[in-house]
Image (cartoon, rainbow, N blue to C red; front, top):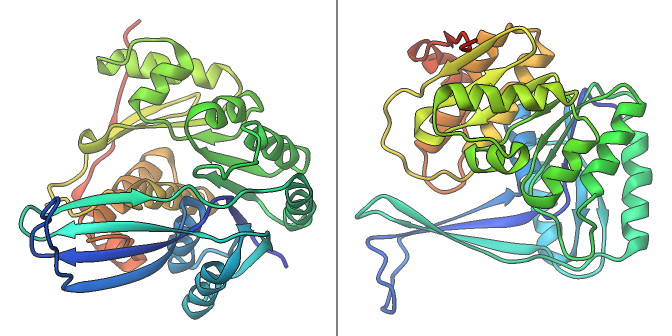
Length: 316
């Protein structure tokens, strides 16, 4: 199956969002509304890209009855997929949205155990899928049994085929994936500090740390700063984009929406400032929604005029 963009989710989930009037810890909570969505960072990216009319395919590992339910939902949404089935059961992640304070509480399961032969099977599947792809998105946590260097292996595989990789991970998986030189990476401030060992208190320090990553062979760095927006750097330019005001409902999927809009911008040839504005808008729109709902192309198109990419000139 051919696709322009392939997204990888090694630890997918069924995201169950329940809405309660007010979360009573230790007390009885009556649910007003339930929503179940296919989840996992790579899957979220694929859903947004599909809504942006980008030729995308989701792959990864899947297990059990919950896994079949997840795939059936992707089918209903029209998102192409090619997952490798493994023993066990796909996890369920519970999101509890409290209407009184508009806060979402997340309770995430660990996921299934993966055997070495399943990893090898997945690598073979991915190698075939990458034969016609232009971009690979690696995002999210790793299930038990999968080595923390897996993203590094996948970046190397993509590089060998001339496929650009966008990496959005954390911990050792991010560190080891970075060593293989992906095309782009999207760390938050804590991750940026961990990766570079540099301070990230000021904007100049953030830019300097981002340039350190570029010097390691990356082409694009996006530093996520939460409510302060993000800094976008390539070897020629640096921009900051701040989000427009919203009432945050849930951060679930906001970063994934940024990654999806980022890839959309790369696929469609947008300039760095345009790409930065679209990515920031996508993340902001998703953060304004309850639970695990993500932005649509129409919403981003309608709101992107509300943000402006500000060019930054690093201090000498």
